[in-house]
Length: 146
Image (cartoon, rainbow, N blue to C red):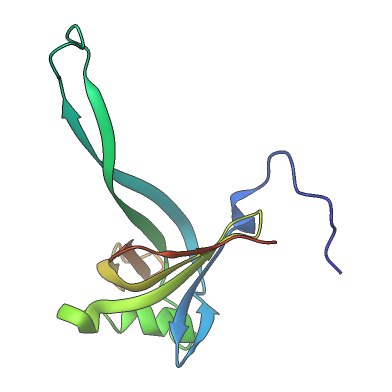
């Protein structure tokens, strides 16, 4: 049974959870080391008469990019699925992604664009990389715990 007390305080990043949908179920992506979220917010600005030169603003758009870096792990279902998108284009380069925050909130990105940026090669003594950006493609589904 879950602790009914809400979580407070700081926590390590590894407690966050990222999964990719493969064959109608979400699986983790093995050996990923970094998930870096960035938000791109569209803000419209205008300066109406009567505002004494002060700018008005309204946020009118949002998108999320999650930059992921880790190691290529052949044989892991999630890792293989992402790596398999490297040569794809169009709708074939999309995947459903689920992110779970520490408070239990889940965010599902349906049809997120997977932009592979590094795959399998690097310095001769490195472990083969798998690096990619998860780019939102429309409004995500956000589910908060009750």
